[in-house]
Length: 328
Image 1 (tube, one colour):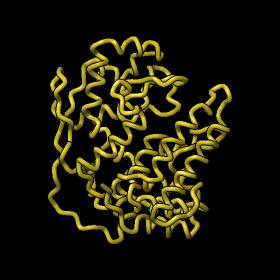
Image 2: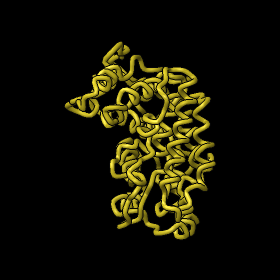
Image 3: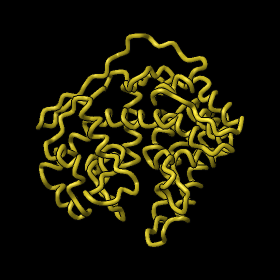
Image 4: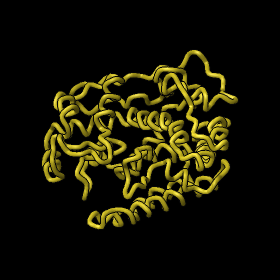
């Protein structure tokens, strides 16, 4: 099942990039940028949309229903987002399952996890980062925001999770977390994260949608047209939405100018800059995967030798190769 493509995505951004000026798109609200970037041939949207079913969870038990299953999904954030396709619950589930396999191998036990060589916990469907209190969040502290998203959709968090959301992860090391995983508290959190995977996927999709106009605006003037063209090519290729959503969840947007190693980041923006110019179609997915591999190989070359990041390249490449023949 494919996600419906966008028509003439980023036409205005391409024009701005071609002019070579440093103009940015002015918007009153973040969401209004869609109306500018997607302002050409926008599909007609019915006034009444299927309402997302809020999750209602008991505090205990394992027979919870997965939130949003069988319901259509539209990011509901402020202004109308008519440039964004409506995703059915089944389409969202396919994206969720792909990300779940990529991050955790489909193993529910790894929804509460701590990777070797890292100084933070990896939580939930997208292995959102959760740093202990007082530790510098070099790669961003994304799990607390996810918890807020779940709460806003009616999910009742365990009291200890709600408290830790504002204080930091309650484990300082991987060993501490592994011991805690034997407790009922952590098993309860793990179960909640499994049952809310569609809400988590919706959060990841929304994060990607919000990043898109920023990617074009943040690109250097000389590469702005290429970024817009390549983003358009991927978004309008069957399977392209999975590619964009998964990579943002995997390695971020690449918008943090102070991130990366030696002044070079490795997010979606950097992949679109490195990617050969492309038109929509299967070749665009191959070109994106090739560029992603190059960007991550550069990351390893720039990384501190003590981190031994080369050990992750094979796994990263395996994940990226799922982009070449994406079926979502």
